Image 1 (spheres, rainbow, N blue to C red):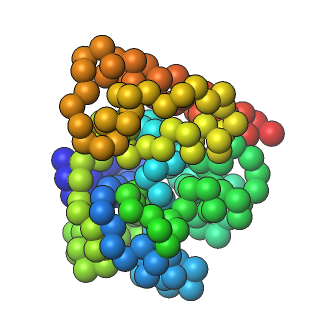
Image 2 (cartoon, helix red, strand yellow):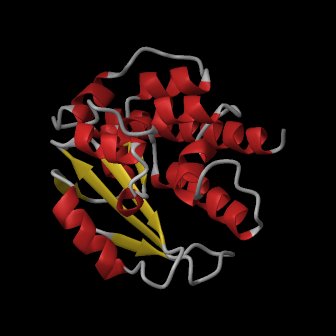
Length: 208
């Protein structure tokens, strides 16, 4: 559903709720980026360019790893929110992970994640802050929406995957045009194949 989603991931402490919101047509990316760079505590979120995310599983795998590392005192970056961005990376370069996955001044589709690291961080408090800070249109946090936003050529480049030609179905999806059933099936298969490879590369980095 559009708006803020609050999730509880299996095998993680229930108190560490995951608050997720997805926005399109973002108008104040440069402002949000600057707040993040300035280290403003009230803007301590994982602010991710949604064009680099292929599915809910892709981002939630990164969230699980980051929160699990928080619980086990294994964070390699500044906090759990920066660790989420880092967890998406196929290598150990933290700065590079922010350039590849983090918000930029020209970001138009934004994925926002906040972890309840204290009792003060609740669904309502996050919802209120986002409503006054994000100038964009809330949209569904779903595989379908993320697939439409994803720039598969960019994702393939980040993870160094082979790059077949962009299909007509993918182009239509990004432009909100009708997609034929047979094209939709091919498009979904292609996205799923990328997801499997991406998750494998993320896990491999964790083993090194």
